[in-house]
Image (tube, rainbow, N blue to C red):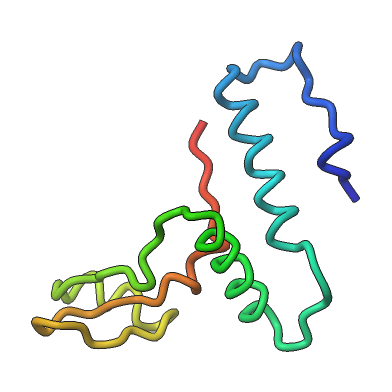
Length: 106
């Protein structure tokens, strides 16, 4: 198990400073996501707690993400996520299902 407060980032590695900072922030986010009691309900309570942590720290996040009306977007997301109708015939996705997603491009 990696202890994020004790982890030493390799200064001689080939990552740029911004890449090392991204890895530090990702490790902290993972620690915050998995911190806390064991969730018997699976990932859903953990995701909700992580989302609340953002909200409690005044980080503006929408409750829902607008998917729009495009069939391609809906076809792509519908098999994996529950989409709900929004105003104007558009579809929306609950943000808590995505709050634990992390992407890297380096």
